[in-house]
Amino acid sequence: MKQIGFEDFKKVDLRIGKVKAVKVVEGYDKLYVLLVDLGKGEHDIQIIAGIRKQYKEDELIGKKVVVVRNLQHRIFKFGNEEIESQGMLLAAVFRDKIVLITPEKEIETGAKVE
Image (tube, rainbow, N blue to C red; front, side):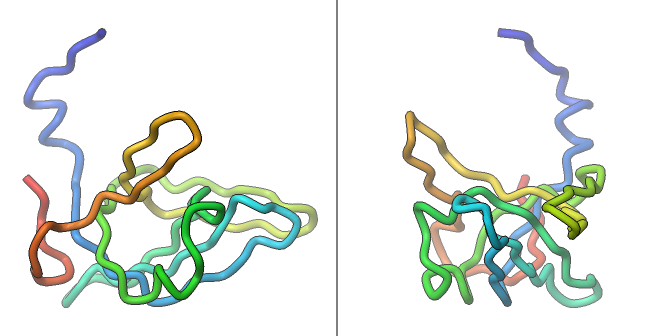
């Protein structure tokens, strides 16, 4: 396992976000486009997430999640449509099981994860 230094880890901006909206990516049975609120003073970000088989849309609305805020944005092409992903959700993965990382207690949207 390759290790990273603490200074490199500090570069990752992890925040608590709240899912505001969920859109299905037509023709892709694993994908959602999520609109995530990052709290006061931040704009909402859009994230493409391969969690559709594990989570229903109504399970995600209002859910607080851990987001990598400063991940380089990436454009994905789906047929004729281009969708920009502006971050990443954190999840635990084992075999085919995916579980989103969420705060253990109530905390403000936008809180920094350290």
